Image 1: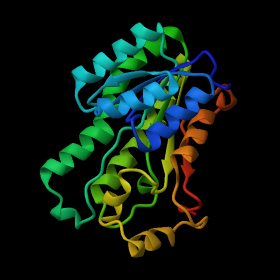
Image 2 (image 1 turned 90 degrees about the horizontal axis):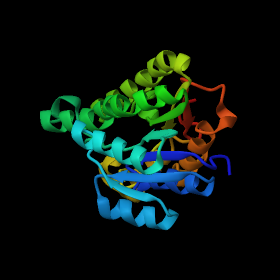
Image 3 (image 1 turned 135 degrees about the horizontal axis):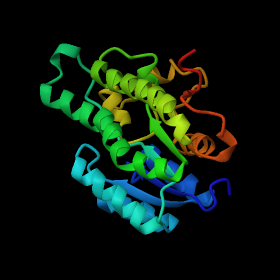
Length: 246
C-alpha cells in the first residue's frame, strides 16, 4: 500500500501501459482517475479498480483543463500525474511522414505535457508536493530508423522531464520519466509496421532479456517512482527495457 491515501490521474489509462499503471496504483492504495480519449475503455478500467473515468483529448487545452478541474474537484487534491497518452506514426523514411501525422505526434506526445503542466502544476505548487511521471520511450535514447519524428517527440519528453524537475524541485515537486522498450500494447503493430512473427523476432533480437515490456512492468516502475520510496529521485529517465539501451 505504498500509495495509500494518494490521488492520481493517468492519461491514456484505458489500455496498454496506462491500464497497467492504473491497476498497480489502485493495488497500492491510490484513488485513480482513468483519463482517455476512448471513454468506453476508460470506464471499463475505472470500474475494475473502483476509480473514475474521464474523457480527455490531451492535445486540447480545454479538454485538459476540464480533466484537471474534475480530478481536483472529485479528489480535493491531486498527488500524482502520469502523462502516459501517446501515439506514433508508421515506420517510413522521415521525409515521407505527412505534416498532419507529424503535427498529431507532437501534439499528443509533447504538447500534452505542456498542457497538463499548465493546469496541474499550480495546484501542486500550492500544496507544496506532487509527483509527475512522463512516459517516454527508449526511442528517445536509442532511436530506431524509420520512426524519426516519434523518436524526436520522446527525446523532447525526456528533456522536458529534466528541466521540469530542476525548476519544480524548490516547490516540492518531483518529475521523472519512464523509458519502456516496445511492449505488448495497441501501439506495437504501429511501431513494427506489421505484426508478423518475423518482425517480432527482429525487435526481440535487440532486447537482451528477450521479451517485450508489459503493462505490469510499467506499473511496477511507475508505482516506485511516484511513491515516497523514491523521495530523493527526480529528473531521471528510467529505462524499463530489458537492456535495450546498453
